[in-house]
Length: 258
Image (cartoon, rainbow, N blue to C red):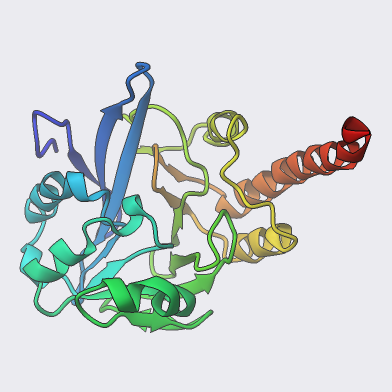
């Protein structure tokens, strides 16, 4: 369903009660990109990612096409960044019972100060029932980036709200795919590499893989269905290779300076 003809913003259900809101954009160089938010409709509805502040009206229209905006209960974010929470206070103004949902670190360093309402700060591994769906918060510091980073797993549908993991270029025209997203996402990541490559990256991705998600709700590009555990382990292997290249480059720095 297209909810704004001008921007192309559209809404599709990717799992039971979970809707992907997608807005395609074009960069000045002609390359396409997309911003996705995920709306979980339940007794206590959740919007995960708000999108940048400038997209607020587009996303609001899309949410309103599915449910009353004022009924939102949680405004979730993976880490403090414009496309995660740029319009957070606009949503809080429209939904009087809503609160931000974030990691304890995000609440401490950013959200408690910038949000117009006190956040629900989730502990690592904490579970939250919003009705039929049971969500689990997982701290993922520096994976892919940000000390405050965390991600959300819906154990009811097997949907993993994976944030910036598997970021794909293009408009994300296919709402839900079972095709290759690792190849495109790695090709997009490598030139500027937004990953922190922290010492715990592989262990964190292995922990996420053990959740065995069946749907990956990607923030940029298509959502994906299949063996999420396998794909997360493949990502870990790809990042191991990137880390080895970086380490070798760092070892050469003294040689180049000599």
